[in-house]
Amino acid sequence: MEWGWKKHMKSKIDSEIIDLIMDHFNILEIGGMAKDKQVLTTEDFDDIVKLAEKMYYERILHNTPVGVEGEA
Image: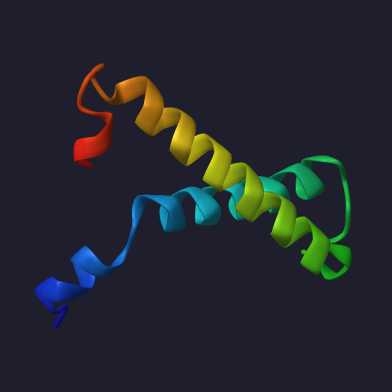
């Protein structure tokens, strides 16, 4: 049984990071790299987190109406 509060624990930026990690492995697989050679280095992960953060803030800035920026 899934508890209702678990749905609220996942943030939008976490979802973005997970999607980018999946993209990372999909790109490696499409590139023909053997499954046992596919890795996510700490540098790759740090880059993914930075990219997800940038995308998250850009989305907030794009979707927030002018004049309400400080109300979030």
